[in-house]
Image 1 (cartoon, rainbow, N blue to C red):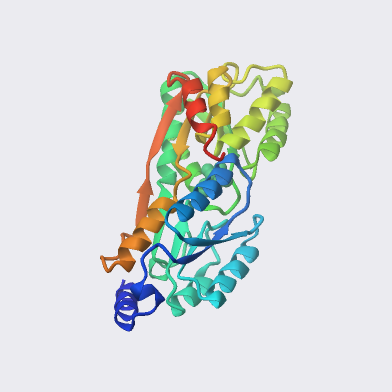
Image 2: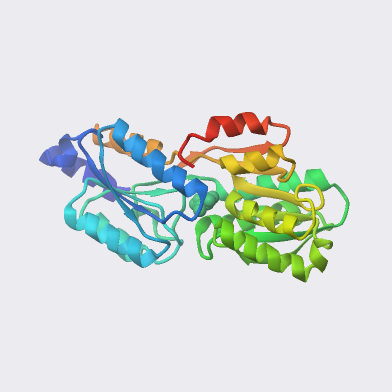
Length: 320
Ligand code: AHR
């Protein structure tokens, strides 16, 4: 708190680039994780669009799923003297040193879509959904849909060590724990990718009597669910009926699956994290007070009852 307050005063009084700038004309570095999912592709597209709209020069770096590449990119942004840095952190741990370097250089860092376990004083703000709540919404939907029947659940987790994988697991576990009829019988990472989601689901199906022992799949993102749906079909079962499918993101392809009756529910995650991030930076640079440490985005449940084909049409051109 003290750091950002004093930084604001220094920047404004000294008439540095930041002190006199507004969003237009800023140079912002963006360390993106990679392109593991449709949602990630959309976030990249939307971030570029939001930057362009505001006249921001966006320096983009694709880390190809590696934290070491993200750390290198952030150090390079610091060396270039950018005005601000956006990071979508692949995992939650290991950020203290590089965030301290950015703080030392007085460059505000905004975390996008995932959180870190570093002290909050090391970053400017974080724009994310409530990822524990997303898991809870998915779990509550399943509890309501299945009722009292016994239900063996298989879980496809996101990238190991990433904040959404940790939180979405917790939220779902919290939702089902008071209901003794639910049991997570298999849980493994599918790395948030379609290919891995399919591969891991194939192993779950084999291990669970060809899928006959499975009542529901909970996938931490839609891409893994879409891969798993393919595996379920290839195993001769009906996804959405023989095995219920609930996941997170609300990418266009899951709406096709919802419309076909092959998926049952998804929790929406907006790909527009950059808009609120740029607005917060803009307000700060105009001398307004610094933002809260967490700018929360909305999480909305969609099911087969929510006109999935209409939503597909609305979403399909949005960069997913
Ligand atoms: O951090 C957000 C998650 O990362 C999305 O839910 C997933 O699709 C992505 O890869």
